[in-house]
Structures are given as structure tokens and as C-alpha cells.
Amino acid sequence: MSTPSPIDPLPKVWDPERRVGEMLKGYRGLVVGIANEHSIAYGCAAKLRAFGADLAVTWLNDKAERFVRPLGERLEAGIMMPMDVEQAGQLEAVYDAIRQRWGRLDFVVHSIAFAPRADLHGRVVDCSADGFAQAMRVSVHSFLRMARLAEPLMSNGGTLVTMSYYGADKVVGSYNMMGPVKAALEACVRYVAAELSERNIRAYAVSPGPLKTRAASGIAQFDELIEDAVKRAPAGRLVDIAEIGRVVAFLVSGAASGMTGDTIYVDGGLHNVA
Image 1 (cartoon, rainbow, N blue to C red):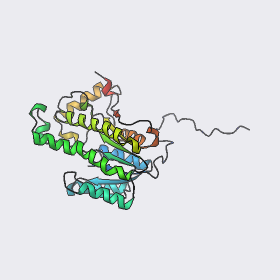
Image 2: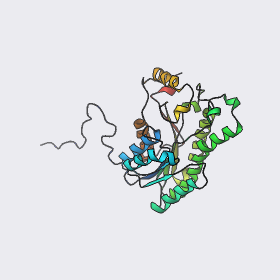
Image 3: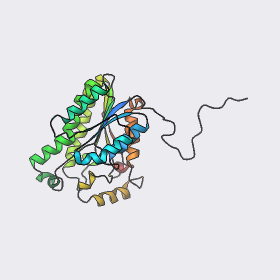
Image 4: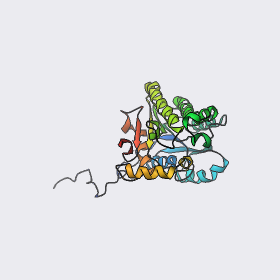
């Protein structure tokens, strides 16, 4: 009598989550940037939780809390707090809560960005010094601050993930000032990866294709950008937040231990098309 194979045959339609189970069970991480259920940050948080991770989530302000808190409860988040990186002490308060509640941190997902509308809708050469500085503070320097605060909590190593866009590498019409800002963010990822590697802390930028999120709605001619992406992407469609979340879960897991400092595109192959 033959012994059954311990490996089940693949189903006709392969489910990439079918046998990963709780590969992140015991992991604890902070997800920043959830605005609603369509947010990239929420897609990441949902997949990280589905794979077993315990989460801390934040919302920007009182107005955002009524949208984010129910999602945090759905995610069974152990820590839910307000956090505006432009308000003194709020970021530090979140990390203090993590230190007191968990005593450690395994990953951070940074998914926040901002640029004043007037600067975002104008030419790069015309952007104001104040607007450019604010975009850099919120979109880039906050990632460095989070990395610095996470470092002592990642005594056994960890993962830092932020969100970029193709406009960091190539000129994308209407992306304007956020192109140079995201380019700076990707450069910071490389430097963070190099500087923290001796602590076994890895860093990545994930670069999704255009998505209909609240944050993206501020980009001029965004509908045209979406339409062009669908036409040009080899996949012939937009990606969704669940697909981005699965990539982030992979990066957070030990499966990505041989990678750091990379920009990972999740855009249906759009970045490969001239």
C-alpha cells in the first residue's frame, strides 16, 4: 500500500494564500496610513493580519478616526492611536505604546505622503520652498523617523516597508513634485538598508501601479493616468490592494531574507513598458 504524498496537488486555480497559513504568527508590526478600506495601507494590514501578524494601526486625526477605528477592530489591532507626523510627540507616543504593550517590533509599513495641492498641481520648477519642504517632511523624513524609533525595538531584526511610485524613476505627467519626493524616499530606503543591515533590519520600497485611493485623488488628470495604465500594463489591468498586501507580507516574512534596499514594483508589469 503506497503512502500518500504529504504535498497536495495544486488546485486548478492556484490560490497564493492556500498553504501559507499563519506564516507571520507571532510577528508584531505597525501600519501607518490607513484612511479607509480602499487604502493601500489597509490592503497591507488585512493581509498581514490574515497571515497571523498582530498589528498596531493609526489614524491621522479625529475626522479620520471614525473610518479607521472600525477597520482596526476588524483587524483585531492591539494598538489603535492617532498619529499625525506633523504634530509634535504623536509619533513618539505610538512607539512608546508599542514598547509598553509589546516590548518589541518586527515590522513597520509606512504608507503616508502629502503635498500641498497648489504645489502638486503646478510645475516642479514652480513649487514653493515651503510646499516642497512639507512634502519631504511628511512623505520622506517621517520614514526615517519611524526607522530610527523602530531600531531599538527590532533587537532580533525586522523589516521596514514604504510606498513609492513609478514617477520616482521616470517622468509621469501630472505626478509633478511628488516624483522628486518619491525619488528621495527610494534613496532613503537604500541608505537605511545599508545602515541597519548589521542589526538584521531590512528595508524596501514597494511601488504599486496607480490605484483609485483617497490619496491619489489629489493628482491632476488622475482618471487619464488610470486609463493609460490599464492600456499599457502587460497584465491589462490595475493591481489591487490585496496583491500589494501579499507582496508586503512576503517582504516581512523570512522568505525575503536575501533581499534589502530594493524597490519592488507591483504594477502588472507597467514599469517595464516604454
